[in-house]
Image 1 (cartoon, one colour):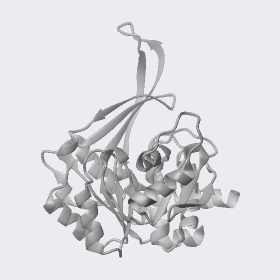
Image 2 (tube, rainbow, N blue to C red; image 1 turned 135 degrees about the vertical axis):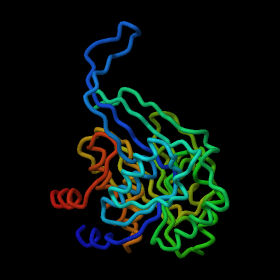
Image 3 (tube, helix red, strand yellow; image 1 turned 90 degrees about the vertical axis):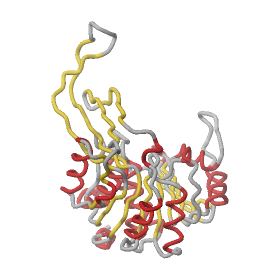
Image 4 (tube, one colour; image 1 turned 45 degrees about the vertical axis):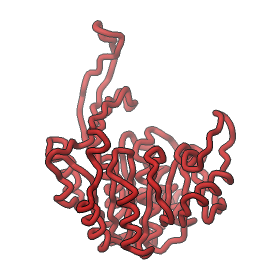
Amino acid sequence: MKSLLDNIVGQRILVVGDLMLDRYTWGDASRISPEAPVPVVDVSRESCVAGGAANVALNLRTLGAEAEVCGWVGQDAAGTELVELLSKTNIDIDPVFHAHGKITIVKSRIMVRNQQLCRLDREDVPAGYALNSEDIARVVELAGRADAVIFSDYGKGTLSEELVNALGCSQNGHLLLAMDPKPRRRIAHHGLSLLTPNRSEALQLAGLEIMRGDPFPETEVCRRIYETYQPENLVITMGGDGMLVSRAGEVSLRIPTMAREVFDVSGAGDTVVAALTLALSSGAEIEKAARFANLAAGIVVGKVGTATVSPSELLSLGESL
């Protein structure tokens, strides 16, 4: 663990995807409104953290790597707040993507006694976030100084086949390319270094449907995903069932979950793709990288809200095992 964390320091990762601001309103509810059958929340505090692709970058920084992000941030109050949050942790965002006419994506969660009561989303139409040819050329340029690129797709329209293909062709297979996918977007991606769907997304990528309660058809899922997308490494996050690791369409490793308590799964996928990418770009084999990411995810889901994991937490947990 110590040598892997040491190797991560200084890795430079470019994150491309849907940037968001996660806003939390914390309070308590002890009565029902006389105006409607809904709880009245007495607000005690508010907080904001980087969300979406920005949370991937924050996870990279917390683990000791350098990070840069490409994704739209509007010239609005939320955008200014998100840029400031990124700047405080030395995460770079190219000024090209701090754009006039865009609306910063904001997810506002109402939290009562550490439980999410509801979520309010503020976002533009997906087409409003698509990158044009000049934007894509800028991303390709920035990727030239990175050790790896993470495509963080939250289904808001920033990523496209043109962007993924442009990066793949420009690097000619010499750059580690990872993707946390949203299959409903139907972005064709082939031959990526790493693909990290969750259980539901893996079924969609494989074109399969199963009945509730049926066992997960891991062999068929891994085979179909490989035949269609040819990822070098496939890691499927299975929630309480841990992780599946697959190479060349075959299941090579099953890892039980390391989560001791689960309070909030928000952003856990961001932690997984960040940790996996960093470990692989540092020279670790996929099995070691997956165990490392599984440890990180087990810590993050034990926290409330969008969160990250630190090297000291990983070292402490590793020593206790």
